[in-house]
Length: 251
Length: 361
Ligand SMILES: Nc1ncnc2c1ncn2[C@@H]1O[C@H](COP(=O)(O)OP(=O)(O)OP(=O)(O)O)[C@@H](O)[C@H]1O
Ligand SMILES: [Mg+2]
Image (cartoon, rainbow over all chains, first blue to last red; front, side, top):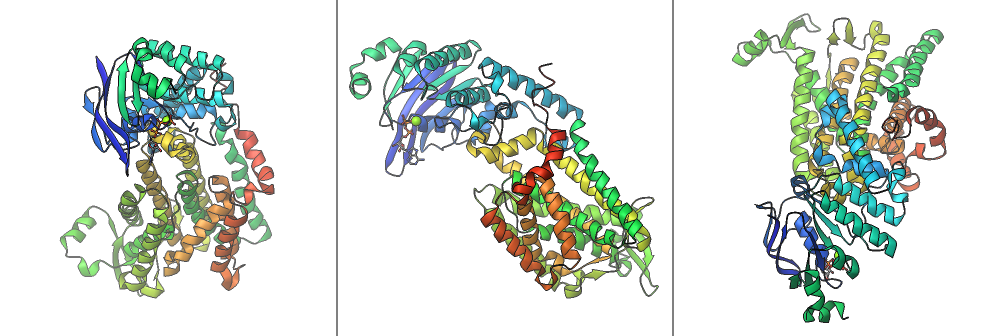
C-alpha cells in the first residue's frame, strides 16, 4: 500500500530551482533514503512534505489525500513527524519536556481544562509523561530526562529529537541526516534504531550522507542532483548506476 | 496539590499586612493595596502574553477601559427614558436591570453589576478576537503596533463620547454584590473585606495561570518560545495558541477594570491612556517576563508606590524610564539579578521535585 506519493513536485527560490519535478512514492513500512550532493534539494523536499514550505508546483499525497500547502501543524496531526538537520531543541525545556511536547497532537486538553486542572487533564498529563519516559528509555537516554535539552551532548540531542518525533505516533517519519556529526559506533546504533522504528510499523523517509548506513538499511534509494531525481532503485542497483557514481559517489 | 503550597507564604503575608495596618491604625493603606491587586490582575495576564506567548501588547489599558467603562456606564446610565423600548422591557423582565435612585433622589433603571460585567467581558472577548485574528497570524511584533492603535482608539472614544463622560469619566458607580455578603465597594465599612476580595481574585487568577503554564497548553506555549518551527512540526497551532492567550489576558484586564471601577466608584480617561499600557508592559518586563511571581511582586510594589504618589508628577516618566532601563541592562527583570535567588529560593524549594518522581516509584 502506498503511504506517500510525491508527484512532479517543484520548489523555486527566485531563480533557483531547488526541487525540480520530483516524483516518487513510499510503500507502507519501508525505509526509503534520499541521497544527493550538498544543495541537491533534500532538505527542501522534506520541508515541502512537512508543510514548512509551499511548493511552486506538483502534488503531495499522504494516505491518498493531497497535503501540499497545508500548514505544518495540520500535517503533523495527520501523522507525519520529522527531525531537523540543524537540531531544533525547545530551549529552556528539559529532555523529558521536549518529548512531552511531541505528545501534543495525541492529546487534547485545552485552555480551560488546563487552567482548571480537570481530572481528565491530569490523567492525560500522567499518560503523556509515562509515554515520554518510555520513549526516552527506548532511545537509551532515560537518565537525561531532567537535563535541559540544550545542555545535552550532540548525539543525545539527536536522540531527543527522535524521541520527540516518535512521541507523535507518526505513520511516516522524516529523518534529515540523523547520523550527521556522529561517530561510527553511534552511526551504527542509529542504523539499528531506524530498523527498530520500522519494526514498529512506521514508514521512514531518510536523508543521509553516510553511504554505508544508507546502503545497509534502505529498501530503496532516490538520488537527487540539482533538484532533479536522477535515479531511484534498490541499493545494489544504485551502487552500480553510472550516473549516480558520476554525480555523487564518484566525486 | 503540593505544588500550590507556594501560595501559603503569600497568603500569610497578605493576612499579616492587613493585621499590621489594623494594629498600627494605618488601615488606609489597604485602599491602595486593593487597587494595586486589581492592577496586578491585569499584569499577570499580560505576563503570560509577553513571557509565554512571546507577544507584546501596548493596548491592555484599552481592555481594562472596556471592562471599567462598560460596567460603569451600564450600571449608572438611566434607562427610564427608554423604558418603553421592547429591548429594555425584555431585559427588565429577565432580571438584567435594577431600580435605584440617583444623587437627586430621582428613580433610576440600570443594569445590574453582574449583567454589566458579563457584557463587558463578552465585548472584550469579541474585540480581542477581532484584533488578534489577523495580527497573530503574522510573524514578528505586529501585535505591538495593532494594540497600540487599538489603545489610542479606545482612549479617544472615551474622551469624545458623552455616554462615557468625556474628560470627566463616569462617577457614582454602585458597588458590585458578587454574592450576598460580598460587596465590591470603596465604602470605608467594606475596606477590609475588599482587600481580601481583591487578593482572592488575584491569587485565584495566578493559580489558574500557573496550572495553565504547567500543562499541555503551557508546554506548547513554551515550545513555541523555544523553537517555533519545531513546535509547529509537533502539531502546535501557533497562531491559535497566541490568539487564545491574548484573549485570555484581555479578559483578565477587563475583569480588573470592572472590579476596580466598582471599587473606586468610577473611572476616568487616564485609565485608558497609552501611558497606562506602557506602564503595564514595563512592570511585566521588570518582573522578568516569563515570571508570574515577578509580575505579582513588581505589580504590587510599583502600583502601590505610584498610588501613594511617590513618583509625583513624574509618574508616567518613571515607568517609561523603568522600561528603557530594564531593556538595556536587565532583560531578565530585576528578579533575574542578584535579588532573584533569595526571593525565588523559597517557593522554588517548595515547588521543585525531580520531574520523574512518582513515575519510577
Ligand atoms: N529558504 C531558502 N531560500 C532560498 N534558497 C534556499 C532556501 N532553502 C534552501 N535554499 C537553496 O536551495 C538549494 C537546496 O537546498 P537544500 O537545503 O534543500 O539542500 P540539501 O540537499 O538539503 O543540502 P545538504 O546536503 O547540504 O543539507 C540550495 O542551493 C539552497 O541554498
Ligand atoms: Mg539538507
